[in-house]
Image (cartoon, rainbow, N blue to C red; front, side, top):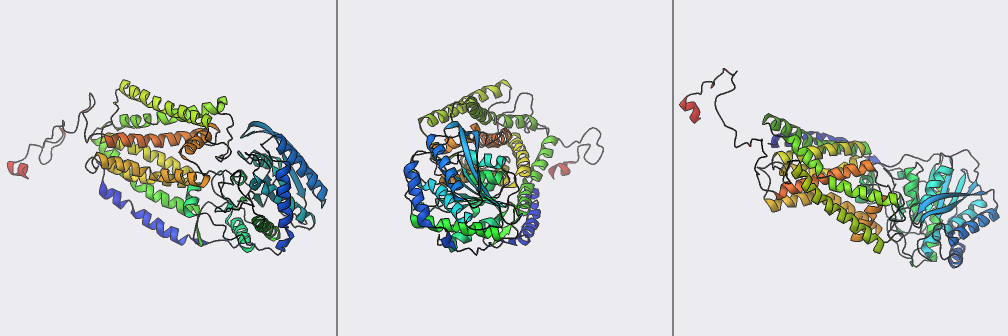
Length: 595
């Protein structure tokens, strides 16, 4: 039913789009340079302060006594520095890894000599586990940077912020944006600066929304780390960029800042995963990364202009590909499927196949996935899961324990029960649990292609996850091309490969096991990180995969539904329609019949 020649011809626009994308490649922006002597940041003093704070405030659960005690210490220290800093404290209610808590954010602001937009420096105080010296190194570095800036003049206003909630949920960073009035040029988030173990990338630019920090800001911090002896901090990989653009997921405070319009990068020796609670710390590492942070901030302060355009394209070696070129490439790869499916629909209508019935059947396959998502929303709304921050949380903050395993098991049982109810539903509606290989496969492709267009309009990088499934689905929808059952099921598994790679990437970056992946997915839904419309699209897309699996597992042909005539039952005659009076209308000659 599907036209292979038309499908191959529809790839011609992709060749033109590829040429346009090649000419769209541009050079990366150059990093900004600093003229400040790096030894202004005293690593020995900062490391001694880290040790003292860790001894004095070992337990710093968000909103707890240790967290509040450290906040008061930060206020006293910043006020004692002088240097023109005005210090105030903001208190608010927020969701944390410990549930709903009252948190405080300490803000110190020092005016610059010009009216240029301020630079924000952020470090969180709290920690999920006791001790956590590496996680406390950001606060120690923040206080040392405050001492440096109190003794020298800056062109831009410097804002220092000590937040809480950074151990999971980034509530302090979100409240900081609401409490301050922009615009801002850039933000530098100080995470783990002292771990003895390095995990790349040490400069994390990713946003909790679409895009990442400006390329110039990233390169400025990367160059500063390299110059100050921090080694190769590691640029985001191509696959990492694609993964974060296709499914934005950032556990650090820079994710919230970037999402809310403040360009920010996270400096963290232990990468996206963050440090383990008992991670050893190094004085030399803290000195190198602390000086790098100072050098980068000074370079931003001296720059006449800082680009605030979020990076939405891809960095390829030393070139950048803009987002519009990638959107064009994705569209031209989606075009062959759309044209072929539209032609197949026209053929099916001429043959009076009931494709609409099977489209509804395909959409019904999404109901178990949607029911599972609604169950997760219900768990979060009722507070059954306890803490459900709206921002992704690292496994060290909310580990996969007995309570988490119970919640995941309940979601899986809900999913299985919904599939049992689905079989009853489709039988009651007279659709049957097994789709017709021809019209059912075409209906599945029609629904999947429609979802692909909607996803492409919202985020072309997410649409890239669907492209292999759409093209492989053409084989399943063509009975004459579809391989045997094992091969057809292998095609369905191959269609899921991009999604599997995405999950595997985040599992590796964040240190998640199999249970941790399921628990994180449940929290993303329960906390509202994945909205209802996104859950609806994901459910529909996974429903198409389930429908493809049913088509692949079924026989080549099935008995027609009651009242529907199969192709074999249609009588083939030479005589044309009643109104036809052309050649052959009288039946033709014997020689013509032989031909």
